[in-house]
Image 1: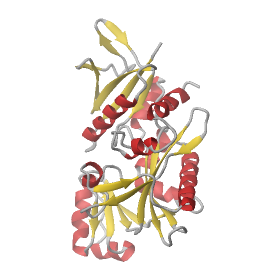
Image 2: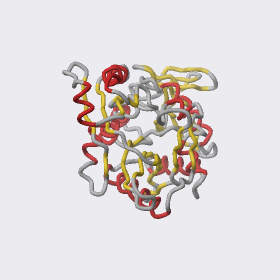
Image 3: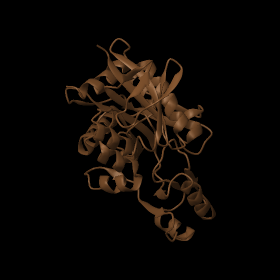
Length: 331
């Protein structure tokens, strides 16, 4: 009998529509011989499941729904919400309470990785891992002056929401006069804002997942080259203003070190499912310093997203990767 899979998408952030596109991608990738899959859209306190073009409200007491007079339930939740509540531990806590297995890491890992400042300060304790210097400000607290920001992290710098994705609210700040407007812009997305020292070098990203036998494997690394924009922002990610080269044009020894670092972080955090870690390589080619930028625990899954690109360049089939993630929770 086929397992019933809920692909949870939408969410309450600016990435709502991006998440729905990821859900459509996952639906197309799933092995239809093994699974019956349905997209469940979440917004606020409501969820609706799409069944044959009909949106049906979910009963959140037990994550069930009624269709043609029959009560239906799910065996597994594949979470692809980018942002709250699917990437910060809230949805994971709900599924833990009702006993439904899901595709991502647990509550603590999701909450930690969603808070960029807290994550960076945790990762500083790990050996051989470099993280950019940063400061954080919260809504309601006394803001640093622009000159204090520049003195601490220099220019250019990045000012970004402490919780969020798809580069919404992110500004590359080049002048002291732009510091405070950039903080205000970021606060439209989050009550906390991170101000980060600029790292210069080659931007790369590496996907990783845990097989059902427990083995942690990485995918081929992607190199990101932006075109006509300042950094890898929304336009670069979703409107074609970047070249994404897989495998990356880096030395084999560097690729091996990045893959090893990605596996190490995955294990240290006790992640589950597919994650993607973004880095900047700086310094002499072949002997670069690996600088961590960000960890994405529910990365984009449209056909053009990094993870599907990397899987296509690997030894795996994406349907098999998704099956391993699902079956790993029943092993």
